[in-house]
Image 1 (cartoon, rainbow, N blue to C red):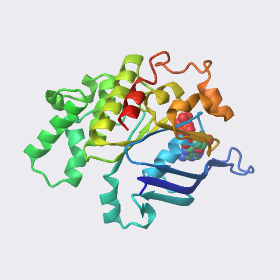
Image 2 (tube, rainbow, N blue to C red; image 1 turned 135 degrees about the vertical axis):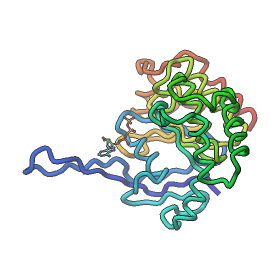
Image 3 (cartoon, rainbow, N blue to C red; image 1 turned 90 degrees about the vertical axis):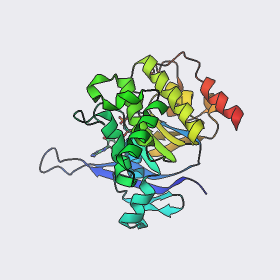
Length: 279
Ligand SMILES: Nc1ncnc2c1ncn2[C@@H]1O[C@H](COP(=O)(O)OP(=O)(O)OP(=O)(O)O)[C@@H](O)[C@H]1O
């Protein structure tokens, strides 16, 4: 059974009227999108700005209701679950957002922030929760003592690792990673990508790695989905053949002229190759 299946998802938005006598414009953010994610695989979802990537992430996470289509997680159509079953299912898929600063409450210690999902789901005592928080911090290469610090005491890369620890707290099977390295400098980008690769191997995680940066995506993904104007433009099941992609948007994102990536020039295939050999 696939981990996640999206069937014929469509989602449109109406823009505000510029003038009262003008008609509101409709934006088709997603048009009949179908895709499947398998366990233990990192799928790179790439596309230019406005192609619908974040809308797709929000639909998967239940933050947006699609106009049409189904989101099926482990065989269950999420729209058909009652609140209790949906809560139970939701622990298995978590999201990490682009901005590591705004994702954490600045007035809460990071230990408290990481503990929140545990307190919502697990019937643990304080000592058990604290032990788990410390274990999670060490998992993302931070120190147990960092639990008592506040977000303002960390760098962007460290904060993103804290957000990953929080997303991992409930031992999910799928992480939706929306532009998680875009706001970081080169060194922090590579640290976060290497950490994600390590965690994926250790916990057999499935990732939907959303990015407009082909270079960062090549570094981590096993397969690619390219989006354009709310539709799937191209899919590639083996990231090793990335140079063979044919769609004009794929070619544009691949081109050396697309120099947005800060990790350009780093040995992009190293981490994927290691995993490929394991499979
Ligand atoms: N809440 C909204 N209201 C109106 N239009 C929206 C809304 N959210 C997204 N859109 C529009 O839907 C389209 C897809 O947006 P989306 O953010 O999903 O694209 P994206 O590929 O994630 O882009 P980016 O990389 O810039 O975030 C865009 O035209 C965007 O302006």
